[in-house]
Length: 103
Image 1 (cartoon, rainbow, N blue to C red):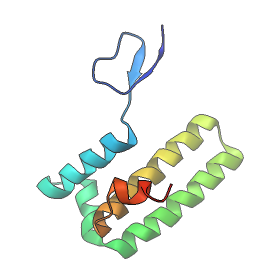
Image 2 (image 1 turned 180 degrees about the vertical axis):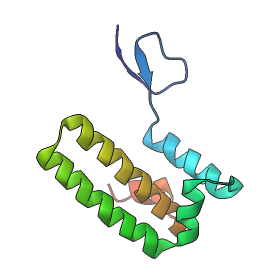
Image 3 (image 1 turned 135 degrees about the horizontal axis):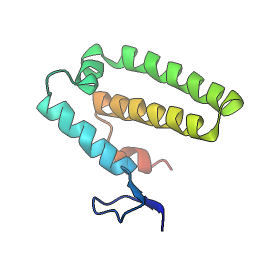
Image 4 (image 1 turned 135 degrees about the vertical axis):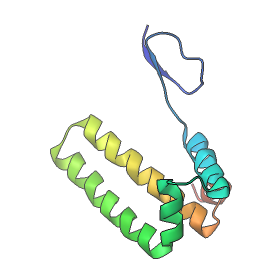
């Protein structure tokens, strides 16, 4: 048996992954506790402009990966874009519910 599971108790052969909500909670915790050496904290300290530039860079990498690379590489780039979008959300005080209200 193989597959993907979003819980911590994954059967053998399954990959445990984070959900969008779990990632947001993890990043929010880092924003609050500010662990030393955290890339998330560094991004938050850099501010909205720097985070926005990173989002534009990551979006371009998603596009290029989708055009010229494998689906796995495109998925990795998409995950990085989602991370930076969530960092921007935290920097601006935008909650998941704020975003979900517009979906």
